[in-house]
Length: 102
Image 1 (tube, rainbow, N blue to C red):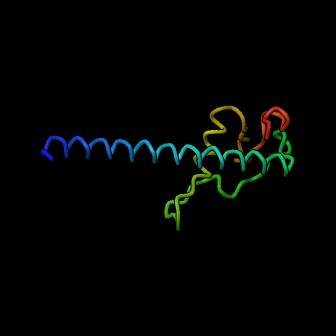
Image 2 (tube, helix red, strand yellow; image 1 turned 90 degrees about the vertical axis):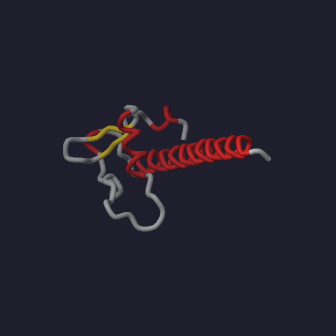
């Protein structure tokens, strides 16, 4: 094989690995988001008055083990206006559980 073909194969491999890693992280975020919504629903955090504290709301600066995606997923749910956050840092569902199709 020529050097050009080897370089092109390497570039294609790295692009494929990057895309695959993004797909895997996206699926993990979706699964974790569903678990967060189920937890809020099961604990009846359906409005600002019944909001609950979530232990994983803040990311650790020194993570142990695998990367914890729960804070990122929770932040995405807050930004997409599915989960609400009270001024004192508690979380609740803005939409009813039947609207979420869990």
